[in-house]
Amino acid sequence: MSIEISNESGVAVDESLIVSVARYTLGALQVSPLAELSVMLVGLDEMAELHQRWLEEPGPTDVMAFPMDDPADGADVLDGTRRPDSPHPSPALLGDVVLCPAFARDQAKSVGHALSDELHLLTVHGVLHLLGYDHGEPAAEREMFALQHELLTGWRQARADALADRAQRQADEQLLGTVGLDDRPAAGTDSSAARPSPEPGS
Image (tube, rainbow, N blue to C red):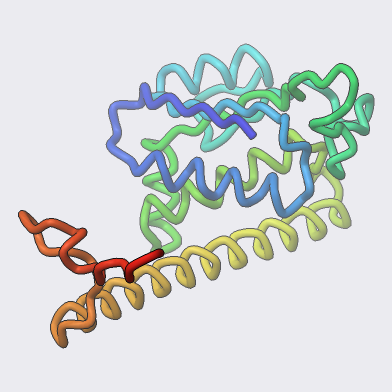
């Protein structure tokens, strides 16, 4: 699964986490592993221009989604039905998610959470739009926002579990080294000296 990210917004963000939450969302929804997604971060002026050009609405917004392959026309984009071993596999071009960190920063302040949290939420929101979800009607809005919350919660838990596992491994390695049970050779030593000599005839 290919996810490209470009930050032209002038706002420093952790791009790796945006890619991570987008990848988690696509995986959780069983999107084809050949899917290609682009995430762009832009400034207020560029987002305002896109907003006016494509939606005919003035001023910037937080997120826009520009689908390429329509999921309604290409069922192979969803549910992993475009197999990597199919006779003529080709990438599924999901489209572009465009984020505006400067706009999102004000939204984050208004609800009392960090800019990073807002961008992660908007990334999931944008990906869901690419996959055909919408919130134009009350029922559709409830479905989309419930799924959005579920995906964000799942990603945060998976990330917390991964960080905890990494910390535990590091602690275990440090403990083994402290008590002399670390079997890795010390720097500057011949690792072969730590191995027993072969028995005659072996």
